[in-house]
Image (cartoon, rainbow, N blue to C red; front, side):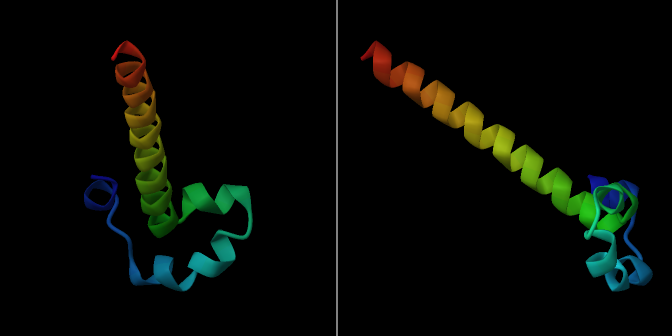
Amino acid sequence: MEAWVRKPTYADFLRLRDDTGHWKGWWQNRVARVLVNFFLTSLGTAIGVWTAGAKLISQL
């Protein structure tokens, strides 16, 4: 969804290495923002799966 709403440009790909060198660049570069969005949603899903799995196993 992030890539659809804020379409990355060619210039964003060229600046990716420089922008990810500091914290502010992760939010300014559209390509980096898509990667952050992907990793954070994947991390949240993994935490939810492990938490629910542990709860299900403890109830067996």
